[in-house]
Amino acid sequence: MNGGTEMQPNKNETNEISGYSKYHPEAKSRRKVNPLKDIYLPLPSEKYDIIYADPPWDYGGKMQYDKTSIKSENVGFKKDIFISSAEFKYPTLKLKELKELDVASIAADDCLLFMWTTGPQLAIAIELGSYWGFEYKTMAFVWDKMVHNPGRYTLSQTEFCLVFKKGRIPTPRGARNVRQLLTKQRGKHSQKPEEVIDGITKMFPSQKKIELFARNNYNGWDNWGLEIPDSKIDILSQKDVEENQQMNLKLD
Image (cartoon, rainbow, N blue to C red):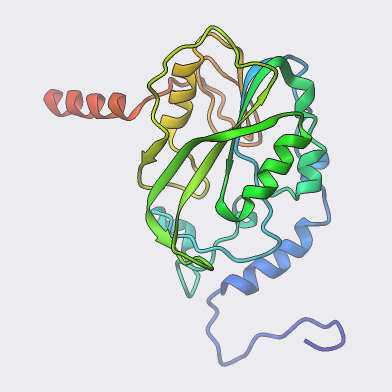
């Protein structure tokens, strides 16, 4: 690339789209807007005891390996496991943009924040939670996705749901036997296991709860995000899913 002109495609190449050739122009155009200001609605005016968030982390334009089980998402790319960036799927937010989200305004005096992050974003996630007015406590959930991606140091196959605290732990408490480690095959890009929100609900069944950057509309939870379906659904644990499958087999 010389003199600011864009590189022209090689006429001898096929019309297949490479990860870089698709990512570069899209990223360039998307950064012209601040998704938080131009796309997302304002946060609700209520206070919540439990906040569950899966921020759309921005990886600075770096390509990420994506071994998603939904192969149709990767159609048209030469390397079907090396084409994914979060910006392909939804508007991402840089740290400075996430800090503009006034999560402190919806947090009750005693509140827990459960936040998803990846290994490379761990320090940034802790910084963000602190900026929002919370103190980092521990890893609430560790998700083994049962498939590894190339990492800079070791092969990567986990994501982490951190827990932060403001004030005291909300009471009354529910279940005390929810396990930290979850082993489950990954689904769509950035889709998180339903067992996590099920576990949080069991630990804090009577508290007022909200999911930020939500993609589902669960009974018992408020939500905020761009991909929320209209109808409410029940939270199903893995046990519920297995029991439903067994019942359907019997009916067949």
